[in-house]
Every structure is written in structure tokens, then in C-alpha cells.
Image (cartoon, rainbow, N blue to C red; front, side, top):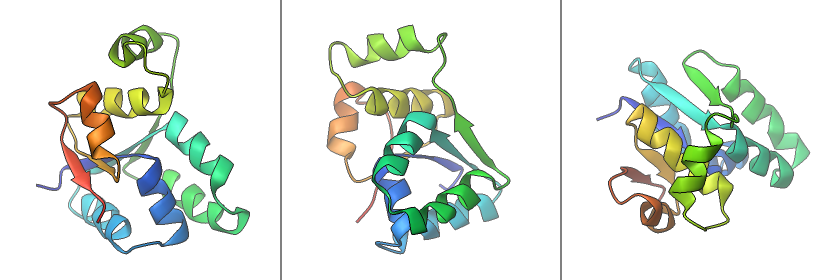
Length: 128
């Protein structure tokens, strides 16, 4: 079951700083097997705000690669994401869950419990 993945903040940080090998392995397998990656732009912005400058090249290489789509938060998506959040303030989480709903791919994350509160039907690929 490796069609593709939606990458949450924790997965992007894991890839950027090589915290574990798991995220990099999952990403490589998705792309190798012809799947894809969806990177919500809100998650990418959050990671750029906290990732050390010397690791940001890893992120740039990732998002510029074939099979990777950066999903922008547009005005057309804002109402759906707002409804999904239902009063919660984590726009990044809402955008990540919205992307998972639309791609039908699991979210690679270490905060699956929080994300499934927004939608219990989404699939989670937990980072160990």
C-alpha cells in the first residue's frame, strides 16, 4: 500500500534534518513505485520557519522533484478547510487533512491522533 503520501510538518522536518530514516524511506518508495507526494504549502511554510537554514536545501530538492505536488491554500479551498476545522485554529492541520481527503493518500505524520480528530476516516502512516 504505497500509492502516495501527504506530508505533514513532522514528516518534512524528519526529511530535512534526517531525524529518522523512516520518512525518507517512505518518500523514496512512493516515488519509486510511481506514486506521488502531496506537500501542503502551509506545512512547508511552517517547516521553513523552524528548519535550520543548512537543511532547507533538502526541502527544496524534494519539492522540485518529479511526482511531488505542492498544494497551495487558495481562496477556493478556504471555506472547506474552515468547515473542516470547526473552530480549531490549526490551519496547517486542516490543510493537511483536506489534502488527504482529496488525494485519498495516508498522511505521513507523528500527530495522527490530532489529525484524526478532524476526520476519523483519514489514513495515517505514523512516523515511529
